Image (tube, rainbow, N blue to C red; front, side, top):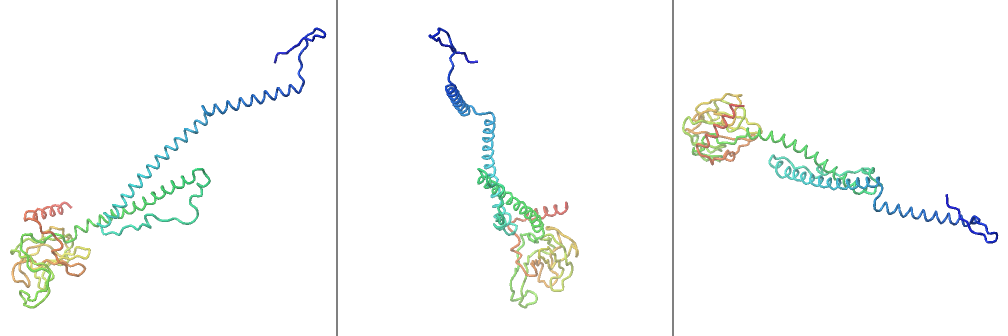
Length: 321
């Protein structure tokens, strides 16, 4: 309760209570209210600026955490994009060319998108542009990763087939590389036996009688016996992929028709059977029926020891399969 105030009335020498007019009371009340309100506003402003409310502090901290997480996410996305570009480059410039595979078109790696607005749910926010950009980058990496995953699956499948193909193609010399070579693929004006002009479609190796002859690639023996066309004792191997090899003028044969052989397996011994002027091996490669130069299919920069070491290695692999 406010203290009552009195004054001395000199007319009757008595103390009387001071009573303010109602207008003065209203003015005093209004003045007190305005001052109180002003003080409250100043207090709230100062408190918020220097201290803030607990809820605001929590929200501010969460916002800072989100900013940090967003920055880290940007770094991770950029790193993922660079790694993916490196994989795409290796895929297009290394693996696919080696395996004779077509490169993936850019329209498949980075497809365009049409139709309705795909980011409509992100519209209307303060950071709409930021969120749309981030979502676009993530979707781009996801789509490219899917394409690259399928590409590597195809590369692995082709690699397995390529390894098999390398085992089957005729890629070594059929006899020791030290032996002198005779006629290769050329037109001979005079056949050494028949005396007539005709093509020679293979490579002759001047080997001693009874020299070991090896299969130059894995495959299946499709002919083993006497060839009436002039090759005498002859072996023909089908290697698949359009390749066939012919080994003519053998003295004896060590494989049978229908038998599967590996590169380096001995198939017979050289001789001079058939239309031949002396001991030698006629070796012929055909690709889809067209004659090829056998010298283009093997490297003879080997010593005799290195050649037989290769044959032994190939034979040992064949035994353990």
